[in-house]
Length: 145
Ligand code: ZN
Image (spheres, rainbow, N blue to C red):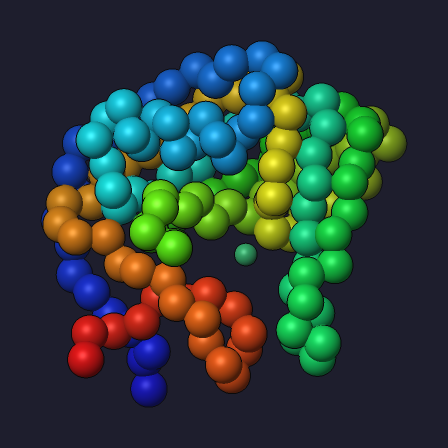
């Protein structure tokens, strides 16, 4: 059974060159706000100068966090924008290549932009709202009623 399914029509799409030295997640939310998007899907390519990434430990139901003070290529970063605690929330995952060409990936908490290009498509309609799910411990989209 599907937990939640909601239909949207695609609104406009934007591209944005992001600011060096500023946080990637904050700039994603800021770009969505500027475009008037409350719901969106996005991808980013570029490079970070440092970042914090997490892995959700399903047994303990806690994120294991890792701060990495290293330049990294954004091999892939994708995500969506919805609402959590009444505020816009960007859920982003990333695969990041380190200088030795190894790749680290997971739930992206923050990233200092070196150079990054954002592509985002807004979805017309009310955004899905995240709420705490007692089974997974995560903040998931819930259906109406
Ligand atoms: Zn995640």
